[in-house]
Amino acid sequence: DVLVLAGNLADSLPQLRFALTVLKSKFRRIFYVPGNHDLWVRRVTLQTILKGENVKDEQRSLVDSVSKLLEVLQVCDEMGIETAPAEVAAGVFVVPMFSWYSRDFVPRERRREMASQTDAEAKVTIDPWIKWPFPCGSDDAWKFFMRMNETALRATLASKLAFERFTDKKAVVITMTHFLTRPDLDIDWTVPGIWDYVGCDGLDEQIRAIGSNVHVYGRACIGPKKRELDGLTYVHNYIGSTEKHRPGMAPFCIFDRGQLVPQQQPTQEKGFNFKPLERPVEEVPGRRFGGG
Image 1 (tube, one colour):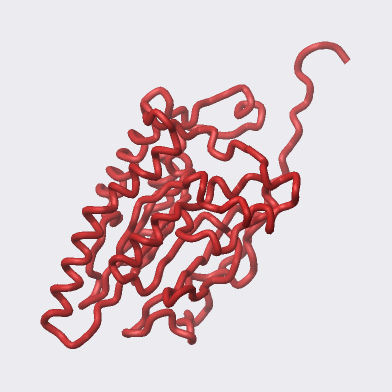
Image 2 (tube, rainbow, N blue to C red):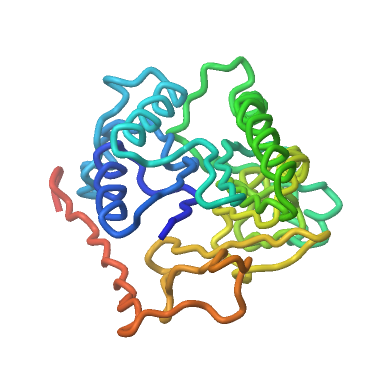
């Protein structure tokens, strides 16, 4: 089996390696794209100590989130986790694509329509541990990642055309990004300012340029598992944080025996045995200093 992972596995390299090791023991091939949490460069602070968080202080060894990205890709390479396009069966291509959010992804008109009046213009900080070397930070990062995709997209298109030249069958292209590719996909409008941190418009042009049949994305943690928009099927089968776990969670099949997104999903004899974890209770630290 081939597993497609749309990012946000862990915020430190040791945790990422652990997660991928577990998954690699279960699946023959794994395709992965990093999400925003995967590129955090965290450090130990007084707040993390008081909360009892086991934080890996990566700011001592990593310069910024680009260096973190390179380390993430090296971990994947060492473990046999695939981050580049590949043909997984005859004429079936899986295309991982890098992505980052752009601030103008969701138009102001849609913000005012979907969010409350006070929230529509809210400015929040979602990724405090992201550090870019670019002059405009995240506003340059999405352009950087889209340029990174260009070589992979050209290679995929060439391979697809070569396959179709010598057969009467059409190639199947499955693309994947962490961030959303179009603003009409579902997001959690109850989180003020989240619309500045969820997607990038130009990504949809890239996936359609190579004739994607199914696009897998992450980030949103809300909405249906699949929906069709303008002839393309979008798949979002999230795990999410603990409070978003739900009974019946299972991998979602997007290609089986020549069929795309089969209506009858494959099952295991004893099920997937997924039991949602209870959210840990955060203890309020007692007062250690001063009187009283």
